[in-house]
Length: 239
Image (cartoon, rainbow, N blue to C red; front, side, top):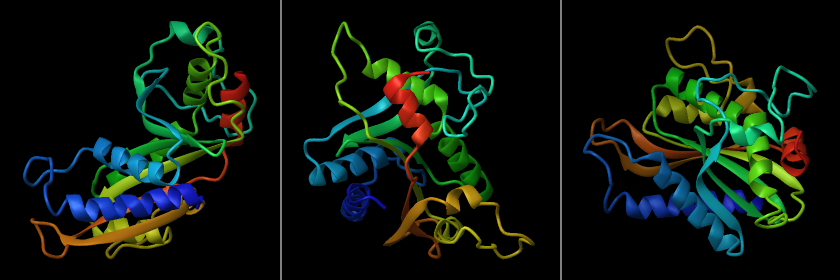
């Protein structure tokens, strides 16, 4: 895991240990919204790289129900019909939770709240696909290359990587994050987590329990991809 991301996660864990034992800004029995997680993570990263560029709730093109086209699949034409010129006329109804740019690397960040294991993994996989999508990469290209406003604000982006953040009260989610081949009790087969197993991951219990159940401890989870070559090419050069 990159030093910036690992350090940011360590700072996130420390921040949450302190802040959530003092005050939880959510409905009693509910969950803290995921934007708190992303913001605290970015604050943690900025301690290591105070010169970094960052942002939250970054728009990108497409309806949330549209199929995702993978920028890193290696296929030159998979039915994706956007171009660098046509993208501005499309609907920008998706949002990336956050990004940070440091050391010539652009990190794309998505976060998820707690769900039961099957839905949790479904939601995480959907975020994973969004982070790899041509829609997101081409939208970034369009936002970065605006000659009438600025040149190339980040210069030449040499790497693009994706980061998944999550929190959970569920031991099953924690164990699945640590071991992609974990088979929960009562399940005949392990979950198919081959996509997650390829990522660099960390999981950390924070040491306090759910008010609903003494057996459920709160944990933070993070995963980072290797370089997204297809996304980097589109972000730098368009389609």
